[in-house]
Length: 264
Image (cartoon, rainbow, N blue to C red; front, side, top):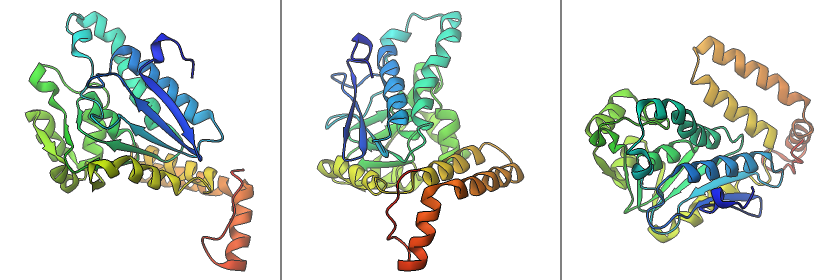
């Protein structure tokens, strides 16, 4: 990731096989166009780097992200937004398309574009005092970075409509009950819990994980027969990997969970 002016508020930090995409734009991590460019660049780097086996998306100890930068958008016309809307979506989509396990570590607010960024992860671990919401209708607009699509797919259309139509905020306990969040922990345990979840995959069969994620994510976009065809293709493809041979030999010799994979 280039350390130019555009990416000053987004860092990619890698340690022990896990990358953290760290938002750091005081004081509320408002997702400006520059921050979007930084997120997209970090997601691309995390995708490309072989030393990155899983990813944490983290906004720090105070706030995950309080939404897209309204000040930047307030004076944009319809024509302006026709041009900008693809960029707004593409940063979040870049995170969703990382072909590795991705977990959002949420403290404080995850609202609007911040909630949409969390929705792009495979898992969401949140502080017990965190707050989620898609309040765009209260500004006379709608979610524009995937919220209408990913939230409905995650928690079902009627629950998504309730949150999006009302714009109401939900606390961590309700977010957990809705299925918007997967795990709730104490605030000072959020990042460690996310690292622990991501850390499970540093020695995993990376190509098998990639295939599984592709099947699940793309399968949700198509009918069942097409999804099953996609699965068959990916299932057959992993038989071409070294890890498949290693895993099966290890299983026959030592039982499950003992293989040392090589990510090839």
